[in-house]
Image (cartoon, rainbow, N blue to C red; front, side, top):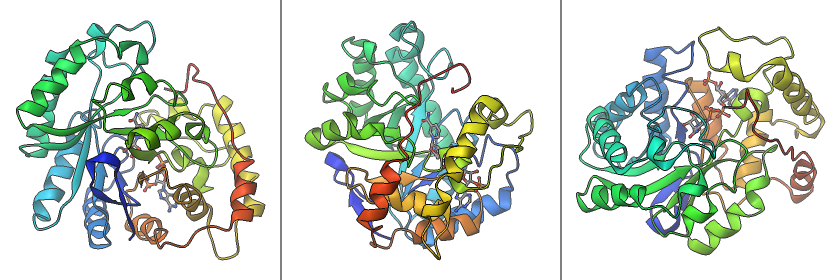
Length: 323
Ligand SMILES: NC(=O)c1ccc[n+]([C@@H]2O[C@H](COP(=O)([O-])OP(=O)(O)OC[C@H]3O[C@@H](n4cnc5c(N)ncnc54)[C@H](OP(=O)(O)O)[C@@H]3O)[C@@H](O)[C@H]2O)c1
C-alpha cells in the first residue's frame, strides 16, 4: 500500500481507503464477511475509513468503531458525515441553511456519531450534502468552531453533491474546510476543471468517492440487472440511467489491458491523478478488498491508455433519479 499526504491535515492516508455505505444500508450484506473484509483491509495497510450517520442510522459507524477498537495499536483515520436536518439528499438551492445545518444540529449529530463510534474525537467530520449559497452565512461556522474548541472534531470536510463538483468552491475559501469528498472516476472527470486546482492551491485533502460509478465500472451490470425494492440502487439504476451506463462501460472493454480487469483499470485511472489523496471504493467482500488494495502498488497506467480513457469523460447533470 502506498500513502499520500492528505492536504494540510498532514495525515499520511492510504491511497485506497474504505467506503462503508454498502455494508450497512444496501441489501445483500453478510455481517461476518464484512468484519473479515474490514480486518483484511487493515492487515493490507488501509488506514482511511469513510462512513456516515445516515448509513443505516449509525450502524455503519458502530461497525467502524468496533474495527478501530480491535486495532487499537494502529492509526486508523475515521471520516463520518452529518445528515442534513431535513434528511434530504442532495441539498437543493431552495433549502435554507436553517433547514439543513444550523449549529445545534451539527453539534447534536456529531455527539450521536461519537457515541456510535465510541470515540472521544472524530478525525474528519463531513457535511453529507452541501449548497454553496450557505457559505457566507454564519451558523454552520459556529458549530464547527464549538466542536473544534471542545476537541470533538479534528477537521471538517464537505461531501459534494453528485455531479456538482463546483457547488463547494466558496466554502473552501472560508478556510474552515480541510477536505472535500467528490465523485471522480473514468466517467466523472469534471472535478479536474475547477475543484482540484482550488484544492491544490489551498492544500485541501481530496477523497475520490464512487470510483466504480456505483457498480457500472466494475463491468458486472447488464441492461437487465435489477435490484431488490429496498435497495437504493433500484431507484438509481432506473432504465434511463442503467442502459446508458452499461453502454458507456461496455465501450471501455476494448481498452482493458491484458491481465487487468475493469475495476482495476478504474482504480488505476484515479490513482494516476496526484490531486487525489485517497479513493474509497465500497467493499463488502474479502476478494474485492484484496484486489482493490493491490492496485496501490506505485505502478502507473501508460500515458497512451490514460489519454484514451480521458476521452470517455461523461458529464451528467443532477436529475430526478440521481439522488
Ligand atoms: N453523498 C456521499 O457522501 C456519498 C455518496 C455515495 C458514496 N459515498 C461513499 O463512497 C463510497 C464508495 O461509493 P459506493 O460504495 O456508493 O460505490 P462504488 O465504490 O462506485 O461501487 C461499489 C460497488 O462496487 C463493488 N465492487 C467493489 N470492488 C469491486 C471489485 N474489485 N470487483 C467487482 N465489484 C466490486 C461493490 O461490491 P460489494 O458491495 O459486493 O463489495 C459495490 O457493489 C461509499 O461506500 C461511501 O463511503 C458517499
